[in-house]
Length: 269
Length: 352
Image (tube, rainbow over all chains, first blue to last red; front, side, top):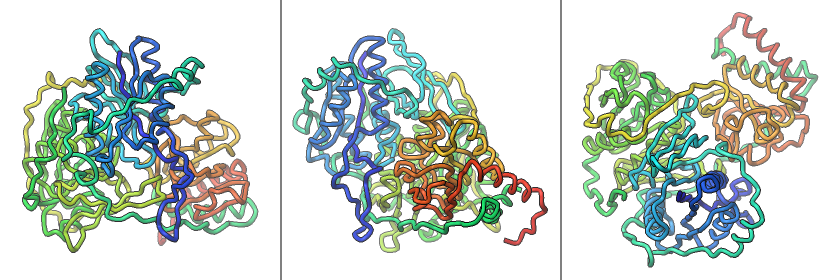
């Protein structure tokens, strides 16, 4: 079994503050974390390895600092981590990002062998686009299973998996041939504590480096210049102000609230 | 392994792309309301660009949607019907839709940012080698360039970004449900129906759906609801959470909760609002016993009206609330429910 997990290091969106005077984000001092959904993606891949044997590889595209997020994946039990880092990727939009990761993944397949299952988070908490996973699956022309909540069955002999995903109205269980790409929900699994040997192994492991020099890249598809979408402007939304504080006894509060809610109530009649 | 997607083969004649398309999402022949919201918006944009609005749908049976599609302003309805499209599956939908776009070359393509729309749009845009802007809340035409300006919240709503797609077509965007209002046209005309065919057969589709479970309890797209009542740690226990559900029912909405509520076992994770849960932008959000950690606020602060009930007058949730009620939610909610039920029974003098 070989699982490849695409991960992203993200600023902890909950700690990003806005400078309302300049209309920019204050990123200083904001910790960079492993995208939470991808902790669960790594967890699932590692669970599979513990059950079936094989190995788990992780890859990220990002600046050298993203090494930290890769190390976290190693301490969560991943076997090998690749950092795809090059200035040519700077400013990539989702199309250019999925291209870079696709080429990086092809190199990993060359180095580490065929991949049975690709995993990534359902979206990153900074950009929230949910496009990179679908983009990579399309480039590989393999089945895509988004919003994964349960990997019901993986059959390596028959090269197929049965998986349950969230839909608009509930859930559905699908069968797909492997390799396939899964984007995962947080409810897929519970994160477990890493045993000490994993932590020691992670501390000793080195991060493998990939760049434009050792992977096959078409520079016409990379970076800001070749990204179809461009950010025209960024601005802060109007700051929400604390509104009216209702006062009075519980009965009075109920009366006032009910008056506010009546328009919503009527709609339902 | 893999297919070559060649971005270098840019279409220099982007002027050949015309008209605005809207994807009509449907499940079992029932259209998702977001599709009509987008048709209404597309009409407005088409007026500025002096072009027509095309609706496009794929399914086992979708032609009955024509009437509605024209009522909300489509000039043309492109559809492909086949048994293989009975259930939504990414790959056959992607290939069929990409084929239609290549053939008809719309300049702008709008898709609802639903579970299905988000699954589909990323694959279609990759297939078409074009840009895609996810989860937008505003669409305008730049009067100078005629380009589509797509604005979306990022970093959980802390920052807004306006995105353009200057050199690739179509300019694709998913749009959040509920952002635009669906307004039927005054004098709908009978539009043109253009039927496409698929060469795909079931044997060629490797993905098989084994089981579908429709659930009202657990998994749910909270983004669909205009009214959300959410509870947190302050609800005290799982039983008390029933009053959250009842209030939601009385208001014709749905219920949700904070991460704390999930951790305490009051609600399933699929009902969590916030950074690692769902982001909502409802018309009314009632936060009960939620202190308002920033991780929760980023998931709900774009709601129109926020009413918060908390015993702590300094709870951060009040900083984003339209109405602040400093009271114990457990005492307050049952009385509110009783009052609302009374109101519901009273004939309404409907003048507001």
